[in-house]
Amino acid sequence: MQDATDALRNSTMIATAASAAGLARFFATNDRIYLEAAKEGQHLITKAIETLRMVVAISQDYVREDHPSGSDAAAPKASTTYD
Image (cartoon, rainbow, N blue to C red; front, top):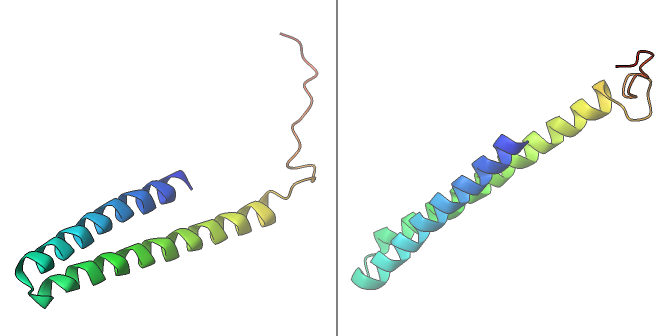
């Protein structure tokens, strides 16, 4: 989960920078080609969010199926030894 969250954050930062650069160049040159950078930046953010949602869903399924809360498997074992 942490890696997926970091990847989303990093992708968002890169995409935002690309979008800002594209918009700045568009305003400076009035060349519509630079608007594509802004669109691609937004597309990258959308894909990163979709990927994070998928990782979260898979993680939730794993926790529910393999480590259900309240089961004996999830409960810590009581120690009978003393250190």
